[in-house]
Image 1 (cartoon, helix red, strand yellow):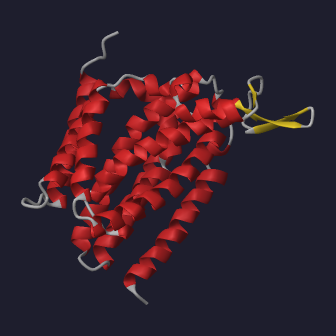
Image 2: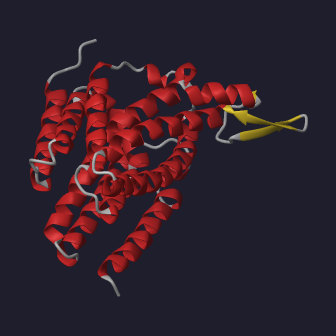
Image 3: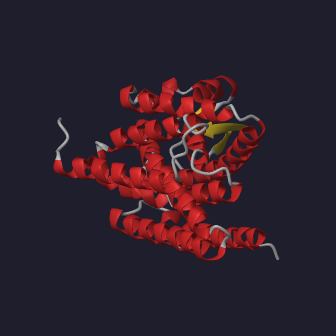
Length: 306
């Protein structure tokens, strides 16, 4: 059996097992989730991804290079996820979604994110393989995103500013009284969508924008679909735990956006100069790790101004 086919099978089985555990075993399945529990499960999912990366190192051809690419892609996706989850937290706050209903909405949001990643990465790899100039397009997107993170406010978290929400309000009947985890309710033999459904639209549309940023980032590290997809999906599967962990310690990460902005700037430049100067995945991993460490350390040492 081809080694890559075997690894695809292992990944699908492992990912499915992790997903089922997260849905039906952990306390994410219902009700509010405590910070301690969320941090424990976050550590478990990170360890699972690292073990998978170790298996790539040991068994895949060019294992050392592929493992570095996997870990680098995983860290990029995870660090970008932190910034994205801050927006999710603000969306739940703006929509007044109770803590006990958030896990269910996040579940469907993550399912949508998994589908988007597979589609976007596959399309991105095909574009780069067929049109070499797409590397420069993706590089420019990352540079734009780097500056956008620095200078944009939180307006994207406001329900009224989301174009998909505005469209939904025009074509769907919305029951603003329904405050629960169900997406649809029935009144007078008519189906209405709920605030939970509108919130899900906001999460998914935000994730589309996030994917347009993160996919070029991971493709700057590798154009191997297996490495790109698995590193992204391993990061995504732990997002629910990460969300509830961040909700309780969000104040510790106020400098993280500067680190993320620098990382996007770095890998954007990496893509733009790739035709005449190649930056190895190992150097990229080092730059990303050091940048995140410094931004988190500064966040802990320097208190945020009121």
